[in-house]
Length: 113
Ligand code: AMP
Ligand code: ZN
Image 1: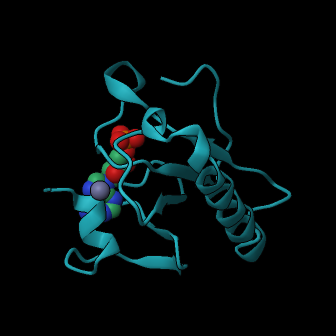
Image 2: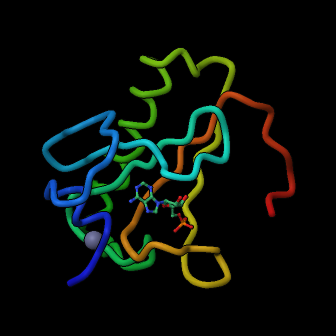
């Protein structure tokens, strides 16, 4: 399977890694949309959040835990941040491997684009 985020997870695609856990990885987004723009991914391939079976929802908690840790360690909290999970074409998903965007460092706007 040709998946760029699986490539980052197995070390064949370079990335600025910010967290390397047993099941979760975080790295800098190549095209940052905020002063801090980090992607948090499971090492296991799920095409989208819609493809995570209920029996494996624990991984979603692990992604959230890494977001909390990064926000704490990088002084993002308590100023705040935004977590985004795009899913499917209307959701604006462009990479077919589940990822959570952690955006911070500027005032976010609403509604999102
Ligand atoms: P999404 O549109 O939610 O699927 O987000 C995909 C994100 O992946 C975008 O913000 C891209 O800038 C980012 N991206 C794509 N390829 C890479 C890469 N090789 N390294 C880091 N970020 C990437
Ligand atoms: Zn993948």
